[in-house]
Image 1 (cartoon, rainbow, N blue to C red):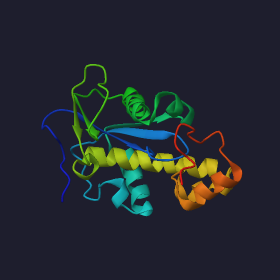
Image 2 (image 1 turned 30 degrees about the vertical axis):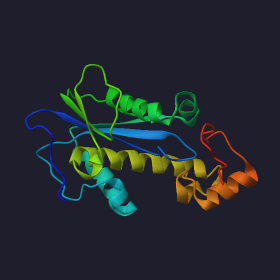
Image 3 (image 1 turned 90 degrees about the vertical axis):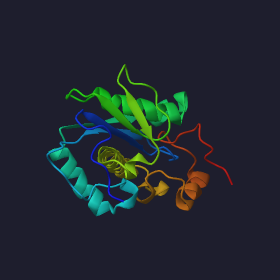
Length: 194
């Protein structure tokens, strides 16, 4: 299915998506992207459907060609304090806060969102596979988060974050049982489930 260029023609739309919501460790990242309608890229798609190489190439294209883009981050500690759903919304708000270009409407991946100021928004389930601006946001959120997880993996190599990005893989769970949690783990999550 080809992704749509816009939800409403003739207005400035921001696509928003997050990455890392289901992880055991690390922050949740979100991105907000305003694509330039004059610049098209048919490769844009849900980040989960793309190879790492394609995601990295598209990240460079988006950051160079979008009218505006920004990334927001909420730490593991904050996630534990406010829960992952609220943290995902907060990460989106932080990304939107950093945009410099005026906009009219927010396109949110998912089925819920905490309203941002008085800006109208539309929640779209699996929106990252339906609208290019949300797909672009999913790519930025994913690539920026993966880059950060690679960095902190150097200090905690036994958790295998360089390969699992903080998700609860068998290697990660085995390391938790052997080494326990560290400062980057989300202790509000059920990390030691069978």
